[in-house]
Length: 202
Image (cartoon, rainbow, N blue to C red; front, side, top):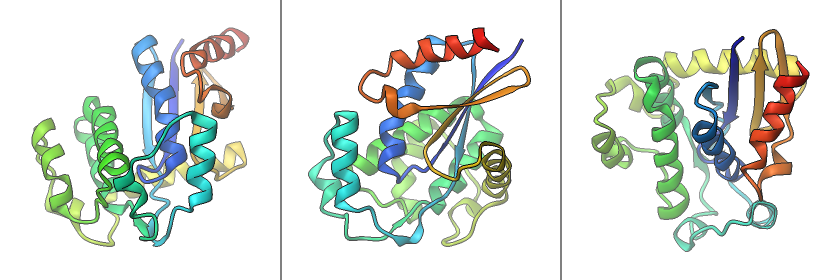
């Protein structure tokens, strides 16, 4: 019997950032569950993150965003290059995908890095010893690996009937279940019990 977790997210989405704590807990506690990280590239350079969203995330998840991040709220977000790099890593060196996602989120939400230029990724690339191709960093252009993930996301969203992000789904054998991640943001360890109940039920 196989069990997989699917995390549909955007590196520049505050709610995704908060939900990542659940993914980390699952990865740490349930090594037998395969984790699929699917970047949906929601932010395309034409949308900001509102202060109301930040306030809601801080209240519901018990986290506090840095001043460096907050001072850039008025700037449109663009996660295309992050989606490209994560799509490439997911295909070429999948065991580094979680570390890469965590590193990008940490730098974006703590240091306020926009990740709209190749140079923004340089330190992370060096730390993880990655050698991504130049196509990953073409401004405003989705790489084929990212496009492939978007196709997979569209199929899943049709099944679950929502395009809302983030989304956490557990697939056990033939059953696919959308988890209510909002219930666990203040207590990430509780997500593991919820998953075990779903597996037992199915």
